[in-house]
Amino acid sequence: MEEIRYNLHNHTHYSDGRLSPADVVRANKQKGYNCIAITDHFSVDGIDEAIAEGTKLGITVFPGIELETKKVELLGLFIDHKNPQLRAFLQQLRQYHDAVLRETVEHLNKNGIRASIEEIRQFAGCRAIFNENIIDFLVQRRFAANKRMARKMLAAVPLNRIKKFFPKAVHSPTIRTVAKIIGNAGGIAVLPHAFSYGKAINIVTLPFLLAFMKKRGVKGLETQTPRHGKAKAAYLALLARAFRMQQTGGADLHSAEAIELGMLARYRQKKPVAGMLRKRMGKP
Image 1 (cartoon, rainbow, N blue to C red):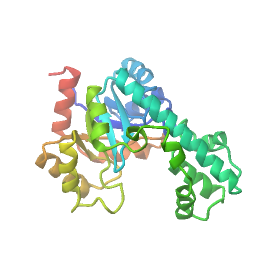
Image 2 (cartoon, helix red, strand yellow):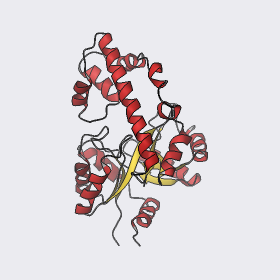
Image 3 (cartoon, one colour):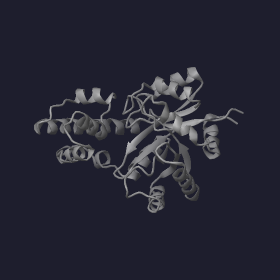
Image 4 (cartoon, rainbow, N blue to C red):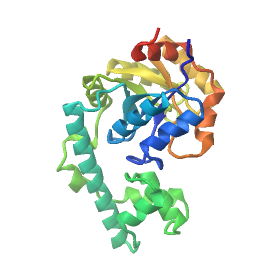
């Protein structure tokens, strides 16, 4: 029986990754993974290319997505990426994101920082630009002394006039809203890298957050990720079992650096995850 080696968290250049979908599949193949998910931020444009490459290389590629809420991010795994409701929501998200980006660059220009969207995009090396990309750009180009100063600069961007043109579900989505959109597309909502959302989420507060999230439709927890060490991974697995949430694991791959995939290999592939994947792949 073939061992299932999974990496269910990968980004391509259709969001904030640096690799094409086909290159992401090949990078996973080189590291020995045979079951992956493409989980770009508010984009499903790279999934078909990844599936086609996976078919060539004998790798199962599951469609996925990563969406923001007001509190945390959520992965949507095993979605129907052609679902009309999901597609309509993603289109609105892209329109809002583009409007925010234009407003941000315009604000920087008015304050003496000469930069264009294309210049920042070339610096980031990906199609979608996020705040962290702009922050790195400001620091590297010495417009800001450090990331803290750069974040303050972005916090001063007036976004209220943009928000009024978009529904609240787009500019300030709740956990319930995003989990419902994922569920309606046939997927399961998963909390990724649980300890990466600031000091407010820690080993004491996380169980309360998971109880809150489960009532709102979140069914999975990413227990294996290079962002957390083995002690936190063990704690996350304990919580997943306690709350009866589906465990998942992923490298959160963004670039070709081997360490991003290699660090995931330090974890043993979990039977609960592999068993679930076997069922979805139709394997005994």
